[in-house]
Length: 456
Image 1 (tube, rainbow, N blue to C red):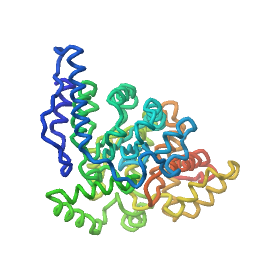
Image 2 (image 1 turned 120 degrees about the vertical axis):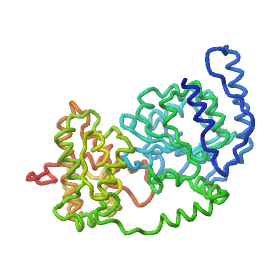
Image 3 (image 1 turned 180 degrees about the horizontal axis):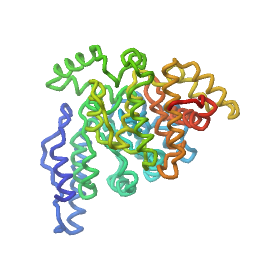
Image 4 (image 1 turned 90 degrees about the horizontal axis):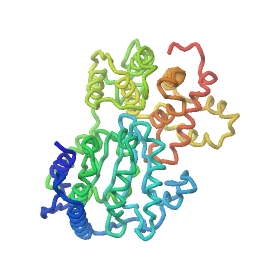
């Protein structure tokens, strides 16, 4: 099967986004093979572009809380470099926390795109690379919110093709999931135009999302900075769905509190674990994953950066939650399990109470930061402090092998920061810097912050 054939199948079988009225119009698909000359190819692409324009014209312009050419609140872009402030001010691209495996989530909102008369698309492409460069060395997820794209703010086809070509292997390799939310027939046509350019491997990462709730198995939706107009559109689609009554029933059932098993390890509080795991003074998952990694994973390249099989992770979680013994044979699986455990705590390890203090760390004089951090972590509940101490002392050992595993204190801070503390509100790109700085300071000053008689 060729890459063109694969992507064609992918598009033809993609969900029809119930409620979006995807049309059954005849589409002129681009043939595979080398039998088409350049003129025919160009005509075929132009014809599909024309169809795409027609489909997009049928969609109503977005009803936004913001004018399409009005910059977003400064909190969305205040840490952008001076070169790109004029583009960052719209908040089109944001880092919105991490997924359930601890990978950064990049959020792209079409409704925030300004008019083509305002946006310099060449500069926008450079801004995309500038933003992604901070995260592409590790695995990450990408979410594209399609609602709000219309003929007035749609990037040109040449921009889309250039963008795909411009983002080389380092960008495509580490993207583990690409969610296209609220797809329409326009997306379907565009994917057929892009067929010749999309590889099989990349095509397999695409996931079409009809309703926001469909991402809840892999993402913490409440942490995503989803624009109000997209949420409103999602609610409209749900209400129009023929099975909306069943959907609402499922949501109602899922919201009912269920008493966890006494063996539960993931998604329960540290206090619950302390009460239900006699013999374990620290969380069982942390003790066992760290013990395994200390023996078998310290020199594993990209430790904590690389993903493991989602199926394998789910199997490990199920075993832990049902009280079955767990054995690891892959350092990356153990590493992902540790991050998933931290991320799925009902309250972050560093607690909600310290969140605002942590964000202020960059305003503290460098010489006094260790003292301030000492005072902060001493406010943690005992079990939180002990778990943090075990984790940081272990990660400090990982740093000692950075010449081999390539995970220095900065890389580990980027990976672990969002898994140690987050807000009760949506995740913010502005918060990522201070959180990562705080985490790096924990690693740098671990000897001062934690006693050395550790049994970690």
